[in-house]
Image 1 (cartoon, rainbow, N blue to C red):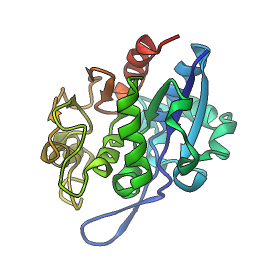
Image 2 (tube, rainbow, N blue to C red):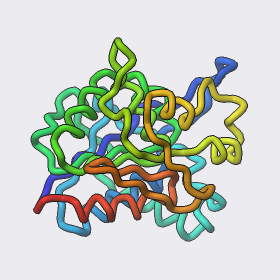
Image 3 (tube, one colour):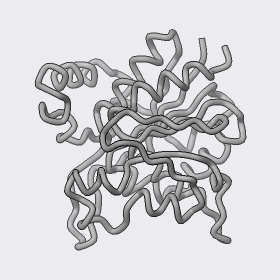
Length: 232
C-alpha cells in the first residue's frame, strides 16, 4: 500500500480584476474522483491544505448542470460528506514529500487565489518533481506551479508538457473577461509547453513523472494514469 498526498486549496474566494471576491473553493469532481480511485486501489490518502484549514467546496460544482444531472451531483455530495479526512486536513507546511509515494493537486478556482502565491506549496512541488514519484495536478490546480518561479523568473517545470483549464474553457465558464489573469497564459509565460485538448473533454498529459489533467472530466483519467506509475 502506498501513501498519496492530496493537496487542496484553502481559499473560499477568488479575487477578480475589478476587486470583487467570487465565492469558490475546490471543485467536487476533482477531489472526489481521484480520492475514490486512490482508496479503491488500496492506497492511504492524506489531505493537506495551507494552514490545515478545512477546505471550502465550490457550490457550483455540486449543481446538477455541472455534473450531467442531479444523480451524479448527489453522489458527489454524499462522497464529500463521508470524507472524514477532508474536515481535518494536515498543514501543508508540515508535509515531508519523502513520506509520500505520489502527490496530487485538486482544482477549482481556489488555487488561483492561494496556491499560486504560496511558497510552501511551491517548494513542495519542486521536491515532488525531483522525487521521481508521480505528481498529478488537474484543471486550475496548475496555478500552483506559478509559485515555483524563482527570483530570476525560472522554474524547474519550464520545458515540461502539461495541460490545465484553457482560455477557451474559461471563456465558456464566463470568467475570461473578469479574471486578473488566465491560467493558460501564465503557464505558457513560465515556460510550460501547454497541450490544449477539446473544450471540457477528458485530456491528460504525461511528461516523465508529471501528470496533468485539463478539466473536471479529466480528474478520473488523470488519477488512473498516476496509479499506473506508482511504485508498489
